[in-house]
Length: 181
Image (cartoon, rainbow, N blue to C red; front, side, top):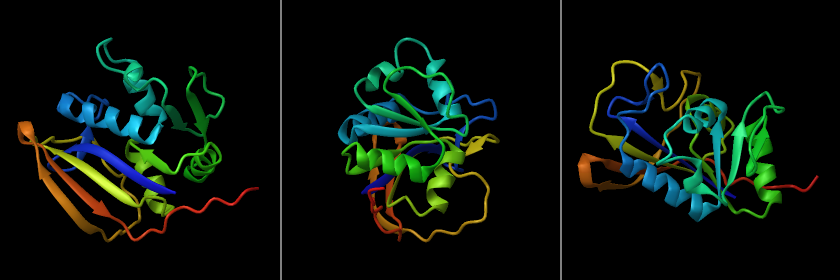
């Protein structure tokens, strides 16, 4: 099973402000996100991302990805969530759950902690970044500060409307192999 990690970020690597606000991220990114969610049929996010999206206005939100299996990575596996949400404690469990549910591609769009957890456990095969034409002084980074070094293979760049540049990379990680328990 292949895993794609997809995020929007400022030119200097921030995905949100310190308070979680994503006001500098464009609507074009949400459209991409929704398209990928439907293409792969699943998305893996963190608890903070879940709570952030839940608090948005009525115009955009989880209703845009109805019918998509939504996995929340959280140590609190008993947290209250709506239907179509599954709470799991680790990247590995998320991958096994998706494999057992018949998916062949996992879609990670996490938040710093989730992204780093997937990267460090070598469960990311492809990284797609939407670089927004903005600099943000402080906030949350694409990957949490941690001890890792991942060499990437450049695949493509695409210049988009509104000055967004989409970069696609491959990692050296092997695709996830599911062993039935």
